[in-house]
Figure 1 (cartoon, rainbow, N blue to C red):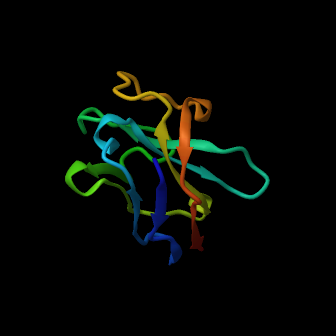
Figure 2 (cartoon, rainbow, N blue to C red):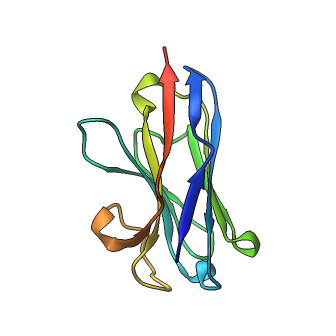
Length: 126
């Protein structure tokens, strides 16, 4: 599974961005997908995850009610809609696919994700 993230950029506080993660391969539909982020000098942290069926997404408390993760299995793409952006959301955002197909859990542990995109930079100015 190859992942390609896009959609990052510079935005003012309170603004919105939509990140996309395009994937290759015919098995996209069978993977739990997630977004992580990493700010300079900080550890990579879980942002949101979505199961292979698209139901019951999971969010980090810091982004709940502001970010929405979704997927289009027909297009092999996962999205992250980010609204109400804050300067503390500034980071490089990575999409990731679970190491295991047809997993029944969305984990926040990055070690469970075996496939990663290159990341896209999001900068929020105050």
